[in-house]
Image 1 (cartoon, rainbow, N blue to C red):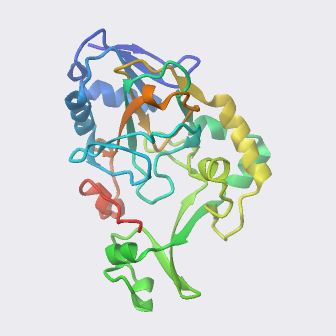
Image 2: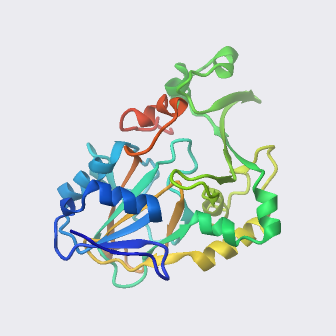
Image 3: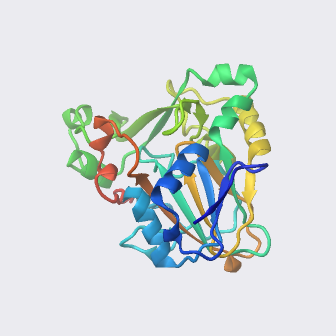
Length: 314
């Protein structure tokens, strides 16, 4: 039996276990709290790799492998990896929001907690929208974000069936493909579009949750993503979003054995700079929930049918 502590100053709820196994939390209770609050800290439970893996299986129908560099694979079969093992602070972002297969849910398991720095942070995208200046909200709400990148031969082969697709193939990708394609100056580009504000899975309120903050403030990218017409999102507009999210962002004071479960369609997460990378070991799992209604189009996508390994980006 878990004790529920609702969100207070921090935006996440806590389920306290007092040494109980993770299996002591009933799935119905876990899903109910998750849907209501969107971010949970599971603290005081007995956790090992098997228990963590079992928790993800209880809530997810499939997983996605995060191919970003700097991660260690802990369990390849179960798609459990470490977080990025560098020491940089990371701006707020939903996991894998740079791609169409953004997961529904994120799990973070603290195997070893840092003594200083390195705290994971979370921020409710619904609260960001609510707290934006009216003029900023008005400027962003009707817009979409274009994610346009070069398509590698491996990606063309995976999605279109050929490393050198014809113009007809580019114009008619299969139904399971999430991209549109174009040929420009002899190169092939892949694109997808998402709303600047969106409705998360379990609330009708609008949320801000995309790759903009990570791209602009860490990667120093101004051309990915852009507005739907290719226009660069103005710095002053994004600075206002960052000011609001900085104020709402809350750290999670890691203890060994903690598990944080985040609705990736509603919350963003980041991290503070890491003082000693040898002290910090956190495992992750990114997946697609088995307790939500999914429309027919989404069901065609391969990441919702089986654990997904993106095509090699080489």
